[in-house]
Length: 168
Image (cartoon, rainbow, N blue to C red; front, side, top):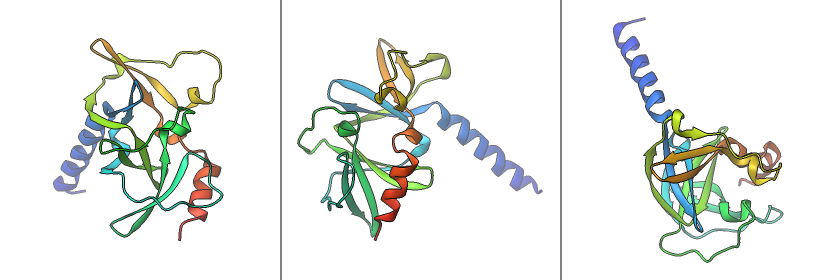
């Protein structure tokens, strides 16, 4: 292995370490959420969504993003929150979940924040609600708390398979 290869490996490791404590924060209603930045491909505004039949209610359909067809899910609906009309602040966070590219519709994207592991508490154990399975932890940022989501659990394997089956 050459010195260049070793340096590239070191840089990659540094990037991984740097990304592991960084979260893209966004808002749904009155709550602040965060997802690990390493899953985020890009952030775009809401665009024309083509509905796909026989999908769960929270899957709004697909968008055409520079020639790539991407399924989009409304995170509000996934969490059984009241639906809301999309506006100029509504965004689609494009993420890679287990090799599948999916758009997450959120009310507003805020910022990328560093939340060190020491500032992440386990999720509260208030029963075994469906919503609790999506929570990675509770991130403390100053006086605020961000609900950190486990992106890999937002869609179950069967839901990912259904989305893949409906790709054109």
